[in-house]
Each structure stands twice: as C-alpha cells, then as structure tokens.
Length: 326
Image 1 (cartoon, rainbow, N blue to C red):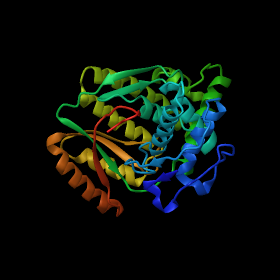
Image 2 (image 1 turned 135 degrees about the vertical axis):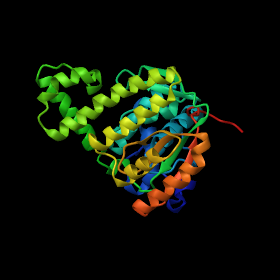
Image 3 (image 1 turned 45 degrees about the vertical axis):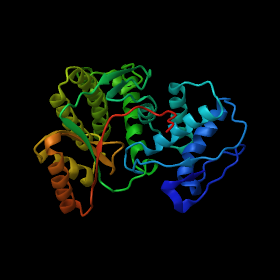
C-alpha cells in the first residue's frame, strides 16, 4: 500500500496471515484493520493486492479521514473480490476495525456518513439500532464553510475515550438506581432532569447532560430541516457548540476562537465545532453574499488570537463511498 498523502512513509507491505497493529505502519493500520475484520467474518480474500491511496480530507482534523480510509478499503475489497456484502454491513465492520484493531472506542457515525451519504441530505441515525432517515438540506442562498484550526490532533491520542467512559459510567449509575436504560440517548431532557441527581460526580453529570441534550437537539434539528428553517437549525448549531464547550469540554482555545469569530460575522446562520474536538475543524452555515468577508475576517481574528492560520473550505453534501469510473 502507498499513500500520496504520506509519501515519506513509502510503500507499506503486510502479510494477510499476520495482520497485527504496528505503530510504524501509521495510516496503513486502518486498511489493515478492515482487511482483518473482513477475514475474521469469513469473507474470502484469497490473494494479495496493491492499492494506491489519495485523499483530500485533512488528516487529524476531525473530518473523518480515518473513517474515509476504512470505508474506501471496504469498497475496494467488495469490488476486488466480488464479495456479497452490503454497505451497512461494511460500515459496521469498519467500526469494529477502529474499535478493536486501532483501539479507539469510536461510535459508528463517521463510517455511516462516509458509506451511506446522500447528496444534499443529512442523515438522522440511531446509532443503537442503525435505523436511519435521509433529510433534505436546502441551503438555497447559503453555503457550508469548514474552517480547519490546523492544530493537529489524533483521535486515538485525544481524550475521546475518557468522555465515552464518563457517559458509560453515568448509564451504570442510573441503572443501579432503577433507571433501566442502555444508552443516555434513550432519555429526553425532561426525563433526565428527574433522575440526574443520582449522578453525584460533577464531571460525569456534565458529560451526561451534553449527551442527552445533544441527542434531543438532533431530533429537533430534523424537524427544522423538514420545514426548510435553516435559521432555527443554525441556532441549534450554536447551542450545540456551547454544550460541547461547557458540558462536554472538548473544544479548547482554537475551536472556540473560530466559532466565536464566526458568531460575530454578519451572515453567519450557525457555527459549531465538528468531530471529536481538541482541535480539528468547525462547520458554519453562511449566507453566500457574506462568505468572502467571513473567511477573511474570521481568519484574521483567529490568527490574532492563536497565532495559527486557519484553512477554509466551501463544502457541499455529497454521496457516500462507491466505485467511480472516469
């Protein structure tokens, strides 16, 4: 395997009979993990193969670059070896690869979005059941603007696992007190308010509060999208960032500086961090007439505050992974 994004690492080779995590293999551990998961599930991969990778998603920026490599590898395996496997099953195996091979307790959202994306649609996904719904996103005179803090952060090295552990412990505490749930997302904010006193650790309570409120925001956001009410959707984006900053505490100076600068700009409909946090990117919805000034002014304020130069991308919602022939 060779990646044009990691030319300095050269070609990375491995044996299909001995697929183990090797730190020296860097990015190639992601496709290795997917191959191993396919083999563990008894899919027939009966020969070696060469793959050239190239991606335009910034690495370590919270934009699912690792999930994109995983799902791409799955699509390649399906196509190359004529495997009878659907996209949802491949997405599930990619999550297993990240959890068990890479060692990051990520959910399935990133892989699902990469694999199941639909042009100009958002996805409402229940990560427990994998029940999902496509929701049209009609931005009309608005654009999605991604801003990269350019503060590198690797998901495996971040405090992502700690946050997940706190939420799981909160579930355990509630179960010990007669609240029979598997996930915090099963509770509405009103239901959680009645039982949150059982969680006595302040930090755990804050983490759980975010999980419950964010889940409810996602459901409300769908209703606004169905009404083409992007203004209210943007307001929920802002609320989400505040919760990620104050309750989940995964933002930091760089992300907060970008979002706060975005909030100050004329034409900003909504802005929040995206990804696991601790650096990475923000996503904003900006009126088209103000995009140019938004990029100039937010970039200027961010550099003054942090000393870093942000990189901006104007993005569209595209289809998910598949075989594309030019």
